[in-house]
Amino acid sequence: MARSEACRARRRAWRKVHPEKRRAQRKAWMAANPAKRKAWRKKWKKANPQKVLKTNAAWRRAHPEFDVVHDERRRARRAAVPNAFGARDLREAKEVSCGICAYCLRPTKHLTIDHVTPLARGGSHTPENIVMACRSCNSKKGARGVLSMVNQDSWL
Image 1: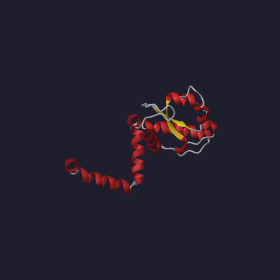
Image 2 (image 1 turned 135 degrees about the horizontal axis):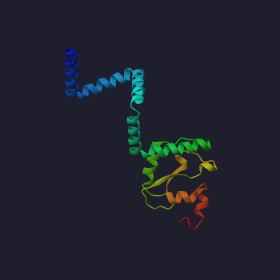
Image 3 (image 1 turned 60 degrees about the vertical axis):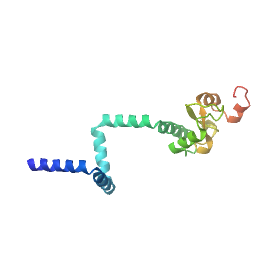
Image 4 (image 1 turned 90 degrees about the vertical axis):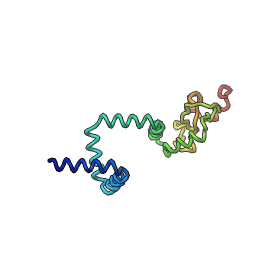
């Protein structure tokens, strides 16, 4: 028993001294054993449900755009329209908008996804049909098209 403990101690010491080699070994093992890795991960998740929930919640807080995209995809599936808009597209749309609403042209921190042709009117959930709008303008527009809103005095 003492010998195996000494062996473990040597391994731990080696891992501390050579972290980059250990990382490379683990990466190679994971690439060579995807089925074992998947089985181990599944077993670990079942044994540690609280850690999984905590980790997932932390990830969602750090990446809120994925929740937004998930909700919008669900709406698009429900409306049975083409759905090709992902988190990368959302980041690009936010960068292009520079924090400015597409309708009132005011800068704001809280931009929302708006479909130019609404899903309820047969619009698609694709980058060509999506702009970033402030909550106020998005709510005013509702399920109407953009042209119906431009003609109203209250829009601008």
